[in-house]
Image (cartoon, rainbow, N blue to C red; front, side):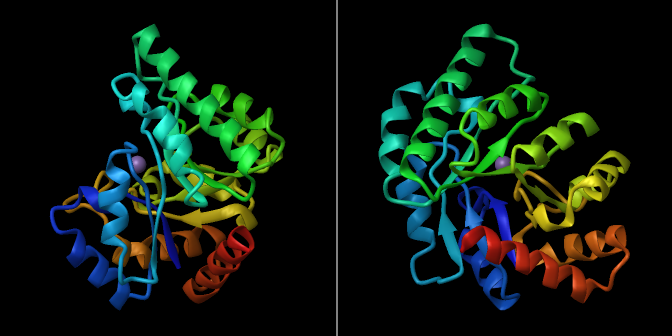
Length: 241
Ligand code: MN
């Protein structure tokens, strides 16, 4: 299995996190929050065939780091993986919201032009404006809605737009998260930790914990854990082909 949204560079000991992921045979999509972090974060992946690094600019940093947008678009020429990018509806300032939109629209346009890109998308309280922008590009890149928390209607719209969904343990511990996961087409579901931001209640989640989220998905799908893992891996294969 692959953890499709993990901030490896933000753990206290990323090397130990990678060692435990490798022992658990779990792959990692290592997302970044600024283009500046990309070089150092990709170095963490050196020597590990299970880690891939994504180029990103987190919406909460878009305003302060807008000048790094050209660097992000350039990095997107070096990697197929993009993230974390998106919009955040909790942002109050209209200036900050405008910066988020500028970044997201430029990233989506570049992803559509470059082809084959896989983009991990943040959409907290901003699902509809994010989907409007995904729809403009008609599946010219693969959008993964990370920690999707929209309405059921927005979920259907995201499915229609061709989106994938990466769900995590913290999300699946809430009634709303489980309810949404149950309504996602199983063939579009991926798995993530969002570590070290998401936790198991005490400690930050890490890729080696992924089997717990798989087991929670198995109970939602009413299948054995092994069957859930097989389906998740099948989905990963379809996405990465
Ligand atoms: Mn994240």
